[in-house]
Length: 451
Image 1 (spheres, rainbow, N blue to C red):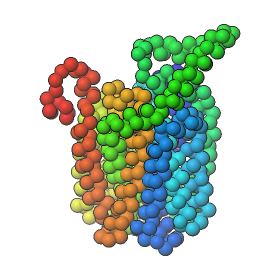
Image 2 (cartoon, one colour):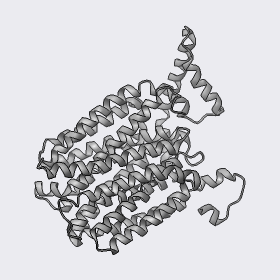
Image 3 (tube, one colour):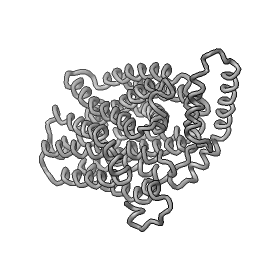
Image 4 (tube, rainbow, N blue to C red):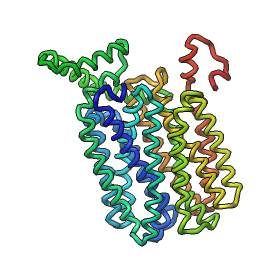
């Protein structure tokens, strides 16, 4: 699939990047607003952390229905549904209502984002220049996450109630909803040749797709036959959704990638969500400016995704690239723990963000690699992976909150190191499909399987 075939793809790519921008804008907000939420409601770390648990439950709920969502709604309306659920969350929070309602609203956001994350990642992973488009997609997330704490900190500093920040998010998400509705019109039909594995050569699929675009000369019978064939294929896909779900759950690679994401996003969101509280409580930073530390992390993450993803993918491959940036990330976070200087630590946190950034798009590129997961279960597997990842991004910040209540906010740093170490062990266990592609018939040594 390319940006011009099917014809609407350019618009769809822009729409997906904008949607991921909004996801990043939303995910980074709690980290900057958490001290103000605690003060507004008079709650501690552990109670404030319930928002992440509620979000995790939403992601798990969507994961349980992942094999049914696309057959029920199709790509277009599944993405619209995700936007509507996120908008419900923003509307509730923006009202400044009681904390239990705010915590529950994160369930709707989690469920909506789970739909969106899986659909856009699978869609982008079908393109010819996969690492380039994935860097745009996840770079968009990083840009949103970088801007969000800056805006949130500025609004609160100007005396605006913290919950009005979510009116901004509500407006952006409504625009996304309309953009998705129009850009993904007809997506279930014109993207079908790239959705299923086929015994036909790739060139045949391309010409088959192209033939639909050339039927504009009055050949109504051929168009009707084509549409009937596509409808039959869609019906077969709907009927096999449960089988695909079972197959995905029985595939060990699904679980390895899912737990990789659990630990990766747990580490990433814990760092982004608690680094401001760490600088405030443990390093005694300036409350008026320390909120910008979250932006330095997300800014580094954005630079890493945009600048490093493609070079790492082309020169080292996803497998080696993830190994290298993960080891360096652990080293930098160790330095944050060791150096008692807020300015130096903020710079190191930004550098760590640069190295953390490429991990997720490289993982998606690797997950879509031929030979790792059957194409027919990729949507389900990546939905499960996304649900686990976002659940990790909810559960581990909650755990950090509980530990912070007992021993102090410095625990975010050792928790990050432990999670990243566990993540790398899982990465070692995944099949080395990049080497297998280059040398399909060779018997590999233990080192070659690893590296």
